[in-house]
Image 1 (cartoon, rainbow, N blue to C red):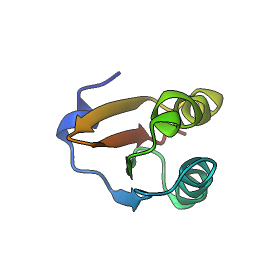
Image 2 (image 1 turned 90 degrees about the vertical axis):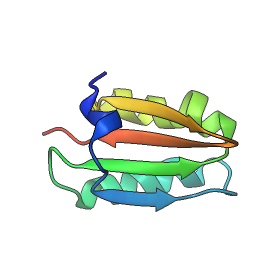
Image 3 (image 1 turned 180 degrees about the horizontal axis):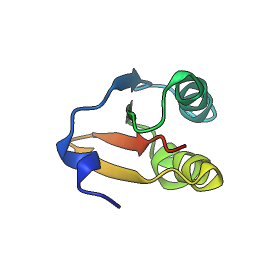
Length: 83
């Protein structure tokens, strides 16, 4: 996973804190569809299964690199849209 994902500012931020599955994944997918290749989406979540399972599987199915940044009780799940 590239360091660009941790150092560059995200192009879009999606705040789904307090939401449980499948909301974080569904909202991220909607947002990513509207974004251009090369842009970074940062998903703010405090839902552990989204970080462990659903968001990584979304990225893997599309071939998007991702990076997980733990920030206190929440996570910044950064996704690089490719293509």
